[in-house]
Length: 265
Image 1: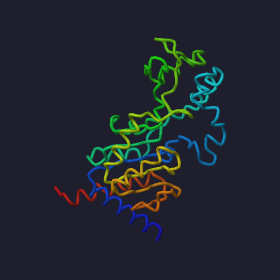
Image 2: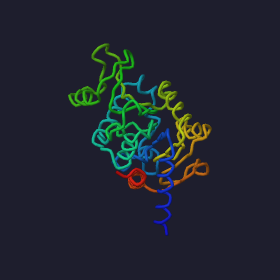
Image 3: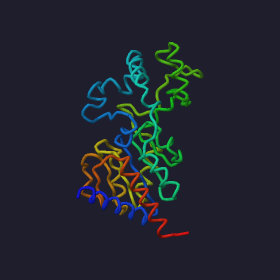
Image 4: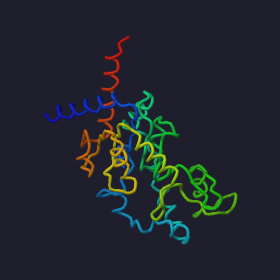
């Protein structure tokens, strides 16, 4: 019975996708845990083992020892560099290739949507991207691999080779505002979409969690795929409390089957 219920919900989502013209996905940590990237906020997650107050922008900029500690934490794990997209990421890439998905708004910093095949200009990274490093003075961007090499050679707190400014992973630390241009573009897409797919987000981190509200205000349908309940479940057309990978793969397979049936060769 439970499997029949899930199959019915997958059919519902597939039908919504086929009837929609401007789909946007909103993704959180739950889409990437299946790629081996640990969740920061869940029980047993990173912030249950480390003190978030050690990872503020103020400490990074003004305390060399804190900056050294943050670089060591970010680079020692290696999980961002080693992680590969999973079935949920590839499903969203397939959805874009169909011409259905117009944007991916993500809270994640792992670059996995781009690795899976989503167009970089359609991925709106609210919290930045761990694959880049930014100079806080001249604003130059460098690939993370270059800085990893330099740290490995003994630079505990690497500086910009062009202006000697402080280098920081291009991610949002505690105390930093979200990037205005990215946030504005994300809000615009959410407001104009007719279907928002929330995947792997518990919708508790603000202001990113306001994204579903913008979609609902624009009269979009809402689908939530997350292991645990969210505060927006009551507003969603379909709610699936399962792992994202299997569910998204089944949804896309169902969409493709329905398209083939509707347009036989």
